[in-house]
Picture (cartoon, rainbow, N blue to C red):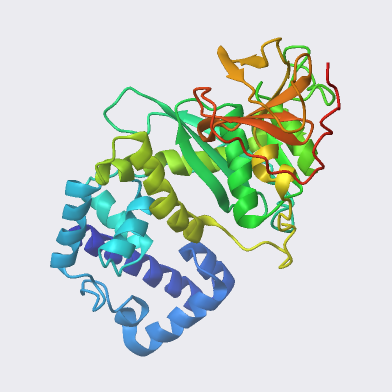
Length: 409
């Protein structure tokens, strides 16, 4: 390497002397001499003055062949490369740099770290370039538009099992407002992401999603979504006054796709590093450790300081729990039972009616939180996820109770 440096320096000296001689004899102007040497006219004038004052030594960097006083100690180079090789092998450079800076006292910059890992052969030199993209402008205020999407991936390294990571993200800031792993994304996971976002940040203006069947009904395959036949997610968003926007091309979801690229490049390595194997452990790590750090590193300020998030003020029947759940209509059988998902839900005696036979009721499925049966706005039965009646049922309501004589047989 030093021999090559000396050869290059010798060539540069010969070229400069030759060009300077032509300049002195009037064959070249300063601009022409600079162009031949690959420098500006101003730079040539400066080097010419140094040459005339100090000779050839004056026009070359006096640091050539000398060690920079800011050069990292060999021990630090060895420590960082050993750390990557033994604990973080497989991490991309940005991920490793961020982690080492936070937890292992790395004081040098990203470029230094990247160059050291490349020199040691621990990472491959990245290829420049990529597809030409047209940038879509972000919304100016936080809370104006949220993105929700899921990514199926082998999040636990060394295992064939794949999970879905469901993420809700703000368009203006790229702030992740909700993220969790599930075995399979669907209506329940989508509603949970919306619920967590509203509980923490408030109501938002619109939700941007793909055209998955749990988000939209699509009458014709590949065609336009129906704005009239609503899914459970569509119905909940309508009740909340949130606009639902369908994406019609992969490019339209570019911001979400880039975010998932980052998560797929980081989370599997971190979960392996912390010896996490189960869904519950992964979700705890995601919520308590990774997402706060991810948001601190990747979220950006919105163009406008004012937020479009509105605090949720609903209560009683209009609680988030009663909106962001699965709702199904049923007719009560002659033995005061309703059938739901293969279960028989027994409606108990009520202070408002003699019975509910033939009455139209609504089943609210809260997932792991159980099931509620409603007649109008009144809850007439509360059940475990397995369908067992809880005693006594919840009678909380912000509406008037039906009359005892209403609808009696």
